[in-house]
Length: 112
Length: 116
Image (cartoon, rainbow over all chains, first blue to last red; front, side, top):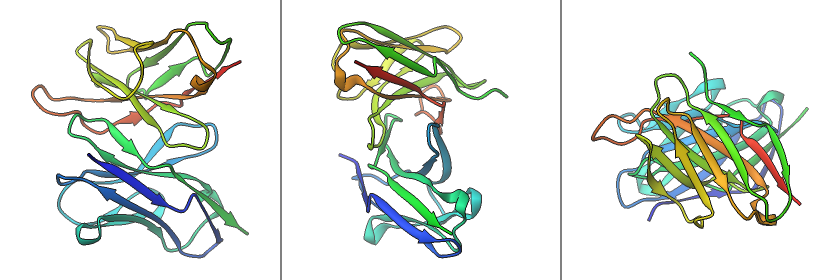
């Protein structure tokens, strides 16, 4: 069975600081992995995805994530946080049937 | 290219009632998936529709049912509402190649259901 674990339900950083949101996955097959962002009272927006190939994936808004098979991780990073990055972030793995299995989410707060 | 739309935006129902939520898929997409997102949780997969048939279901009881129409839009119906059904319901559309799996999912803004 596939699953996703997000470490830390709430992360707080200062504006300009490094953002690191952690995600570990469990999958018996090569995983397709995703990061989504959700702003208050809105749906989910895709930040980036890993399918095959290059393990460092670049997404929108300056975010990137690195697929590390040996660590079963897919952590999300951004070098310099902006106030507009405050939102909830979800890591997800895609099942063979096509649906997504999500982690519980990490709420990112950015302090001025 | 129009994105995924959902209606209504908000809805308040009483326990025991029935509700229908609607979703219009993105242009060119033929598959619709529904997710339930309870407060403070990640989205949970309810079911998926392809070619007007359910072709995948999560751990939800039969009182959660759906339809997909020839234009690929979809409805989610919930009977005998319970307080725990209060959540944000998200619809996602994608394109499935015949004989292959669904592609990338694009999400709508969701319908906020409150059951009192």
